Length: 357
Image 1 (cartoon, helix red, strand yellow):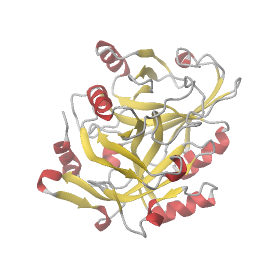
Image 2 (cartoon, rainbow, N blue to C red):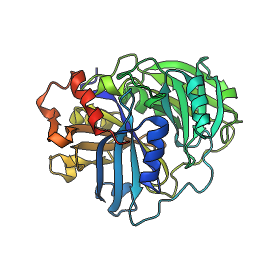
Image 3 (cartoon, rainbow, N blue to C red):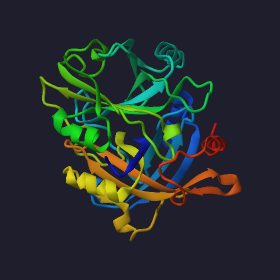
Image 4 (spheres, one colour):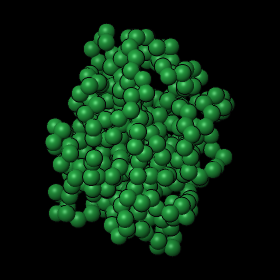
């Protein structure tokens, strides 16, 4: 049994060229209205993925309190972020789509259409017979709308937050060392090979694929687990073409899905597990900070990265300080509490006072 604790998907990183415009869109359509932190600074620790140089950036972490992971919306300052050299196709290596949770796929898809969102396909059925649809944001990133039943706050929004991702890989068994052994997605919901109706209208979707949908048999635990909720990972491998790397020739923070981030506790134990499994940390903020918290403006913690076998970036954040009610100076130090217990509902719900309309 692993000695570290994973609380769930904290956020998916999304590189954009106009943060304010993008956040407004994600707020309206996916309910990402709770600002956990906003920071304009220099990213000094991501040199392996940023051309070997510190890079100025503007970042916001926003959540949807109905449930689900947030978005870290990320914009370079002083450098024009690059788009992929060619259209990203299903099965390309990296994060192909972000999953968004909803109570009703049909209702949400219809509502998004009324808002002018480009619906690529659906609602249709995935290989398990569940309703699903796919939509584009205005910047070409793909979101999969999926049915979910776990919710934290009851609100009038049509969606919750991030529910996982579709990730292109070359070898599913090798990739599962990261996604099953390290991240704990040990349940195989389906493992299907062939051509799939729900993918046909996606870029590159009229190909043969192997698709493996993974969930956890053990629920997430820890401080933010009630709010972040469950999630799933779909690994997809294309069989009749050579896939491209989505971030080939580009930097972390360029346009598109840049990483998948997990909130956790027990970074030292996680580091040992990742190293033992052959996926050592490629970035570790503790080394650069001499053991101290990494300051993220309004929050603080310890972060690290690993790569899956195809170079997709997985981030881990051990949160030390988080703002609950900034106007009153209420910041929570998570190092002073039992890491196995979820935060009380009244504390999590107080995050609503960080909402931005």
